[in-house]
Length: 382
Length: 140
Image 1 (cartoon, each protein chain N blue to C red):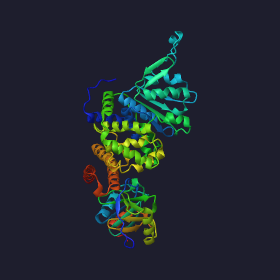
Image 2: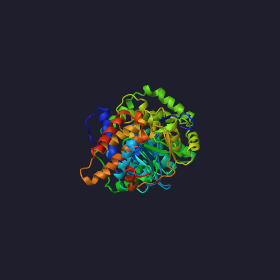
Image 3: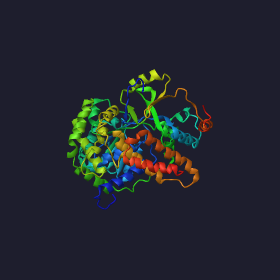
Image 4: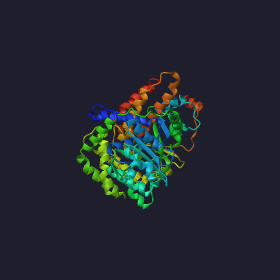
């Protein structure tokens, strides 16, 4: 692990983390929310289940976040015949001669800080039971081996949610749910272009930031948002969405992590958006967005803007994301006349998104100012 | 708008995907010039009148100019093109039924400010030659 100076300024810490997110997202299309939810889960110390078809860059996203944060990473594709030793490590033969069944865990899941388990529900009962303790208590127990694990976040992937009721309890350990789809037709060119780029070199991150943020998340005061949170849960129930009590309680950690990532020591309504991702099905999340629309209208996250926008579909989060898009675009103004045409089309595209998304009288001031900068660039002959 | 019943518009929680752009007066001229500044598009179709222009096409092809308004389809009222950022204060399906009594040729742009209904049923390909002719006032 790299040693960094003590981080006291949470905003600076989330800014550092935002760079890691940006690096991980580079070249990945439509995976911003996934990357941000991995980071949110890592800060909250919760686990994430990604549901989607194969080949949708799920493992790549996790690998990049782990690399960007400089965390020890383990990944494995589970099958029906996967042996526990393939994931947790082989039995230590020297110890076995002494009559002890110890597991040699070097380089295996019990030593990982970030884990990615593909097709997790295909795992055997022996694997899932050992995983259960590892996920819940961060303890690896097998034979005579009992070891505390440094696991921050386990990301599991599956093509679908398990229908077998016996797997439901295991699936419930994954508090955060993210549903991914193949890249839409309109963004295929970006996908192809991104795929041609060399992958990001791992490392270069700052784990001390993550430590500081995790600590800060644990210290966030949730009292100011408790009644709004309870109100949100009641709204979900009225909409027919019954989260397990465990989910309701644990999702508060996500809210606290969202507040810490935005540099806040007290959670507010702006930090409630992760509750949507604690709803376990895609249909349920869609219903939750509708049921919580008014409550989440003020949702905003400085660090995790794509996920906050996706959860809330709120105008403030959307406006904040567009302001950033405008600034990023204007910063990359081309110098060669040949590139001007394509640049102008990009500017027009963002101007269209602003004018199509916000009535002039309903535009947040920061967005109105960004629009002015954009229009000035367009009129200035960009 | 139809028979005197007032319909207000309020911000939408989530904007519609734009599939049409509408402009009048100076904004319409700016829109035409913006079109001419872009590579010719085969997928844009238009309806026009003096100082009024409406273009229909995929979102990525719709040009931008100061003062234009974007319209899209609400699944609840597929015959209408409604403002992307606003929704009617009455159920969209009811508005659709009322609008189609007045203008029977869908799709119909429902422009709230100032209120007007514009049928895009007869939208025609609107290439650079037509745009120049419209700008010169030579297009009836």
